[in-house]
Length: 309
Length: 307
Image 1 (tube, each protein chain N blue to C red):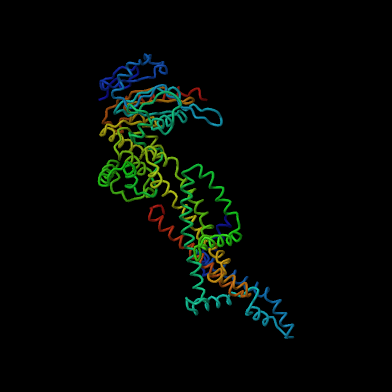
Image 2: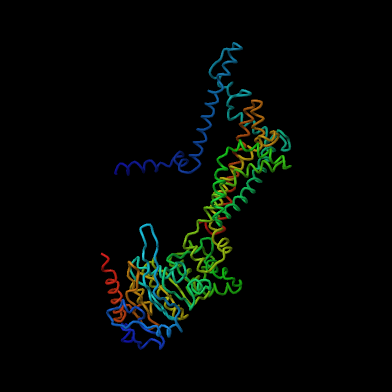
């Protein structure tokens, strides 16, 4: 007991730069990011060196370790591109290219983003409608729920081409088929979330409405719907990310002309690993941005409703 | 000045009771100590003129996995207009179940239950009563004013009148100025006052209160008891009040129903005619203590077999 008391003030009392940095959020996050980058560089050297050594051997070049490291990090088609190569590629394809150019990552990101948002909106509306039906109708609950769950067990990659083909056969082309694939993934977390939310009111809150002889309409709009709002946002956070995955997958079978999915596919056709990785990073940034946007609107809405304490 | 016959043990009219108000009723077979004669059919017909609640032979059994639970068994009770009736008894004696049955939140399995001369269900559909739960049960996404407005919105009362009523009822429970606050910004006592204002907002003649102050501390509880008594005195509403507290029951009530458990039944009905303008200090008066003593004895005998 006394040793603890003696040691802990010494540790926290120092208040050096390090302890101040680590006490907040920024410090630990920075450390983890640096660790990831270090591992990435190390892996790049390890994964790219066999090919590099092969080249040295073929050209009978004498090589040093530092030579090897610098060469493995600047290959044109590395197995794993170095972070700085990806950053340079990102810079070249976003800032240096006009956004209307087919080589601009901003252009491709926008294509994917618009598909994602359309799929997300359709998915949210569909998800809410399904949930309302399930909560208010026992036979819908019994009949729909198993289908909804099994729909999510089918690999999206398997079903995406069929959706494209079927919709194409009835004359639906362009953004919609891709958006439908995004919807296919995004409606599920919404439905599950809202079903839980609509059933979340406490018995006492339901009893209260019963004593007022409230109509089902009032019961829904004045109790069930407001109760489900936090659940809706939780569902939307997952849905927007899965919607992006759906949008990217939806771009693959369409011939891969535009969108981040197309960049991924084209990159893998031609072994452009740097292009693949920059498209991956762009997709990850897009997802992070979208999820935090939903998070911010969640906070704003709950605050407006008076539920954020 | 208190009437010497404040405790009416034999069912005869007391000095303070109004002519039509009858004393201890309907518990003939359970009240073997006072030798009251069984109530006749005709007398119950006479009471029905100003009686709000008529209960005859009411029973309610819950079917559970461990077999049936007799929450209520053969309840007879008549409650008149303007009565403040407290239900007191140990846990599991069915007092809350009885209140919920009156509110049509539970379905009795036998007997008769009339509220305002109609069935409990019809009374609920008519919105004849306001119900105050154990917990405030305020909707967290509504302000205090919004919560009090809830029944008014459900009942389709126009906006201008809603505002009038919200202001009036917030003043009644001393919450003026808190209309824009959210429930979590208020103390437990204030929240419960808001829930009482909500129950009063549509001006029901009948108020059903299920241990509304059970979760509050003694000081807040005393204060709210006084306020509730003033309110009852002012509005002449009929109140059914479930409680665990003997002082609370004696202080508030014009009639105390002592219940005992397994099966839930009425053990004793005590008339309690303390002056209407009583203050908290009456709790030290001998009349008060006498009634409290009888309630305590009733509670003791009512479940002595229990251990």
